[in-house]
Length: 484
Image (cartoon, rainbow, N blue to C red):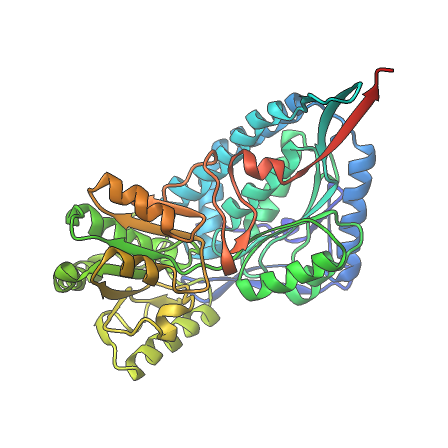
């Protein structure tokens, strides 16, 4: 079992570990036992300001922004190598902090984090401008450069991956970063601070301030030294963050909440579809913005699918995340567990059928909830319309393709969606009509750094991954030279 050294539990500012100015510390809890793992520094506004000033000094004076993309890419390639060399330790740390099954932290979190840095290391080479044809008697060209100091604010559910998806492109473009991880899950951010320094990232280019959202996060959003805000989290907090950034006319990217529909058409390969459906709602214990908690099933298959889920879902291994056979671990904290309980109780009050699950699992004092399938809810139910963010699946029938699309698009969210069909024309047709940033066909959660994802509607704007993300951390300058 991983233990966490107390020294990296300090803030990381200007390449140095330091305590919070007020000396405050906060507990980090192991979700599988409810016990304290360690404590980390709790930053206040003065600590945040120190981190921003260090990042600004590094942007102006460290030479990072002035390096060629190729040279920055070499450093980021080294980061990817170090992640892979330390994969066991990072995977154990992420499992301990978040409650993720260790098999998944190895296969998903660590692998994707390494891939993120490797991808943007290579893409850094492509940061160039272009000449532009013009009827003016002039030579016109564009230059692409970094924005400056980036505030990266990341959530509790995928600390390592969702930090890398912001930090890697930000650094590749030549920016410096102040990172505020979720107060519940800060450990991998602190670990990565030491690893980035070892890889050759200059002091001050990457800084970490741990602490609460209302104090450290708010101070970071409002700091005048920040040039861009990159945020992943709830829609409610994202609205606030975007409004604060908007007051200062700072560019933002927002990857917010989701409530994806997973549509199973009558012509679907049912065996493959059921596997994708289960993966879509139990992955990461349902704490996945791009999870598939709303299952829409063609009416002729409805009873069959509900029956298969009733038999299959209780057999998905749930328990100690350190055991390699575990698929479903604990919720990340007590408040998240209580939120799930409240929604399931609401479903009961509305007369829904609890097909399976619907209760806590008492295990080692941890925050476990049995994977739950709920049938026979109206589409306007809050349980259907709102983001539960736990291992809960609602199942609803539909009678036509048009109805399925209308139901899929009926919530305020638009982050992800899924289609199960063997009809290629239908797959293209329905994918075009779904209001979501990414649509998966005949599987779920197929993600790669080269394929962008992000939201529409209340799920945010801007894109993570792909060259689109790199472009969002740059600004374009045009140069026009008279030839008279």
